[in-house]
Length: 340
Image (cartoon, rainbow, N blue to C red; front, side, top):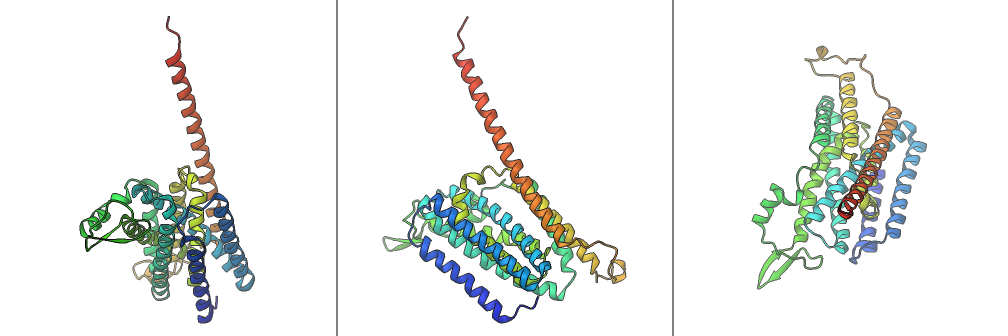
């Protein structure tokens, strides 16, 4: 793709500038964003991401453009799942609404830093060890299984990791505005706000393990991996407040993501076989008859899976709501029925 160090520096600088602007323009003063504010900024960041993808397609070719869009769509879907866990954490810690912006902002920045580190490691591994595609493929297939059958079984706010943190750190029972620590009688205590940020940082580490192998299954270009992740995370704070109620209605999101991760896992294994160098597989020779899944098919498959999962989720929640109303109505009829 021919990305120069100067382009990398400019891209990282602009990304940092966006998050600094976000903090000073929206997060520094504690408040709960309105629907209008959230909608405008969500549309701005999504539009910016799409425009950037078009720019990649025009400048570097639509093969890379397609890889970017497939990666962005995958990372955006995984980020929405990330939001769902953030919602569980903030509910578990009872974070006041007006302070949730700060928690989200810090969580998103931690996520970008975590993913940046994983991107660098992944790029180095791919550059030097082609067999890493087997590892990434197997990891994604395992994560797909976990996503489909083990999602939502634990409470991150009360898990083993957070219980350990509570034993180590002296914690106040109540929030002190958005402060992370507070001084009481000459002794320094941490507030629940710091625990929330620690929990989100830990979850970000787990999600980085999901997201980076997934996007490396769609492109080998570290620049596309980074920019797709950065744009997927930009505007995530506003999206949280915009679709907060909708998150709980996306009941099939985990299954949809499981299908996407499994698909990319299979794609990675196919690619690993196609460029095989392991001596105990086909004598160390590539298996050229193994098909390489084209990026246009990956993009269509991912988009279709996200669409089906969303539509099926909304249909199920609407059906469940109607059934609940009917049951309540029938229950009231029985209660008020005249006695013989």
